[in-house]
Image (tube, protein in one colour):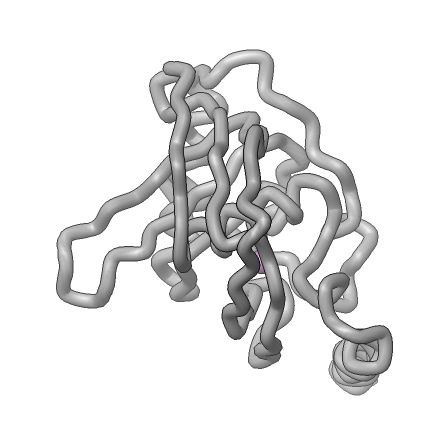
Length: 172
Ligand code: NI
């Protein structure tokens, strides 16, 4: 296991890629899962998609356990949202690929998701609350979508510009 570099804005070229399904959850996929989990805990964050460490495969990890509680990692391969509630909830979201930026995002309050677990078993999960939000955020990553795509264009342009500017300054 190793902590990998997290790709951040303005590097949209990688973050905007659509990730490919894994043919099976094999030793290679499990090694990616392990690196993702270690990278996420190190950051720290509550969710991470493989594309955020530059791997364009439909893999994500989530852990909503609080500090001091036993870890509860969820390993998800090839997720598919099979149902979403009409009820909407909003959470202030952030993203390890967009450091230090937080904004309210509306999403379905509950979802049902089909996926493969760490052992390649077909699973179904009914999630609500923060788990539903987090899973939708991570699944977006697999489709090249960032949470800033769900906010106003004005706010999005502002944050993208900020990261472009910071990147240029860093290279002087
Ligand atoms: Ni994110």
